[in-house]
Length: 85
Length: 203
Image (cartoon, rainbow over the protein chains, first blue to last red):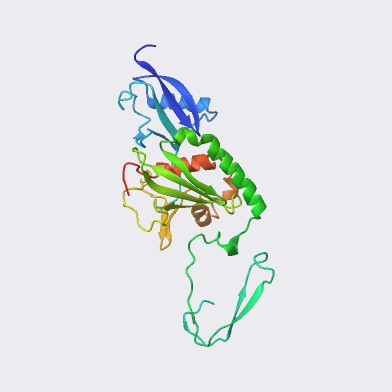
């Protein structure tokens, strides 16, 4: 595999969806692919991508911007949504 | 009518909803100087014994499905959250710090599920209801909301898929239209709840 490409494992609703990404690619491109694999294609509105330690990742940035340069597992789920104080 | 103070009544009649007791009216003789206080019932207001709206058999069937969903998916989140205890109608979820310590416990009460959404609150690791948070442990969303309603009984989650939210926004945001939305599945709900918490901050 080209060194600028690696695999991200997206965890969505408890299931794992591996996606090949490019280090300079926008993260949201990989997220789109993962959601499509999970049968939930469409807008990214409301979705949040986090590391295992809970850090939220800006999906508009690239993998390189976030120092994600190799295979790793990330967690994709919805945010809190409406309501609250 | 709620009464507070010394009153001049000699008996009190309590009307229970049908099904709670075989006899729906009980008359209690009470002393003439008995002090009656208006009891604040903000904790689980519709999950107390006088608001058990859903037949227990139905509730248990939905609870079985919820437990199955959790069992099938929990391993993927073992370093983020884990099941502490499950007993009808409650599910307790440990939320873990990156080091694996229990930060707090999410409490889900599913007694009226899915006629109503789960009642969701937070417990401290010693099982007491949380009365105060470190203010920065709950992350604000993009609109600056913390999705919590605090009262003197604890802190309750107020976001779509939880009882507090749909009870408050009932007329415009009905649970009946949302309860089969995948976003409101139990595992997704747990993940959305965990996302509210800054797991790097110990309580």
